[in-house]
Image (tube, rainbow, N blue to C red; front, side):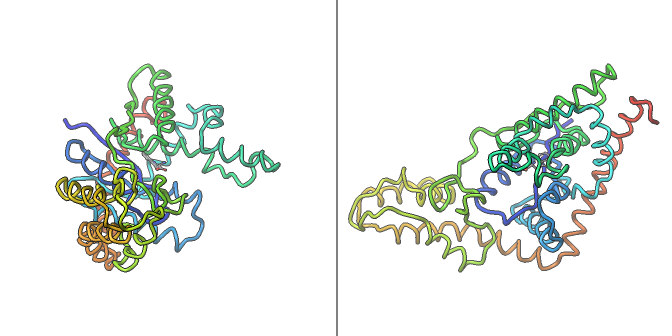
Length: 331
Ligand code: TRP
C-alpha cells in the first residue's frame, strides 16, 4: 500500500511564485509517489480572515491555483477542511489529551502574546481561541487521514511535533495504536525564492511576484525588482543578483549558462536582464494563468470538484473517529 502524504493550504492572500516553488511544486512531486490528500484549511483561515467575501474568494483562488498548477483531483483527494465534520469531532476528542502548557509554548501564540507584553497591553489582547488552539485543529487535520508524511515548511515543524505528541498520548493511554504518528516532510532541496528586494519572497515582506496576475501586472512587478547602480557596461555577478536567482527557476540549464555569460561579459544593463527574466517567467506562467482563468470562470464546477474530494475523504475520516470512539468507550 502506498504511504499517505497530506498537507493543508491556508486560503489567505494571493498565491505567489514563492508559494509555487516552495510548497505547491514539491507537494505535487510528492503526490506522484504517495497517496496524496491535500486540502484547503478554511477554518484555519477564519482565525484571521473575518470578511466573508474575502474568505470566500481566497478559498476559490487557492483551490483554482493548485488545480492550475497541475493538481489532478482524480489522483489527489482534494477537499475543503470545512466539509469534513469529523475533523471537528476529532479536534474535541484530542483536546482531552492536549495539555494547556503545550499550547502556551506554540510559536504563533507566544509571538502574539510577547508582542502584546512589549506594547504594555494585556498579554492575551486580540488573541482568539482559534489562534490559541490552532495546533490542535491542525493535529486533527493530519491524524484523521492516517497521514504518514506532512510536507510543510520549517515554520510548521513545531505543529507537526505537537501532532505527534498528541497522537502518542492517545495511544499511550489506550495502550494500542489508535492513531498513526505522522512525520514531517521537510524537503531539503526546495529552492529559496528571492523576492523583489532580494530577501526571501514572502507576503509579509511585500516583495512577491503573483502567480496568476495578468501579463501586464506581471511585467510591471518584474520591472520593480530592486537593483544596484552598476552601469550597462559593467560586468555583473549573476550569483548575487536576485534577477538571475529568479531566472534560474524558470530557465533550462543551457539558457542559464548563456545568460550568466552575458551578465559577466558586461554590456547588459539591469533593464535588459529584467526583460529576459520577464520573458522566461511569462512563457512558463501563461499556460497556468490561462488554466486558472478558465477554472475561475466556472466556480460551481470548481466547488463540485472540491465536494467530490470531500466525498472521498469523509469515509476515511469517519473510520478514524470511530476507532477512537471505540477505544475511548464512546461507541
Ligand atoms: N498551518 C499550516 C500553514 O499555516 C496550514 C495547515 C493547516 C496545515 N492544517 C494543516 C499544514 C495540516 C499541514 C497539515 O501553512
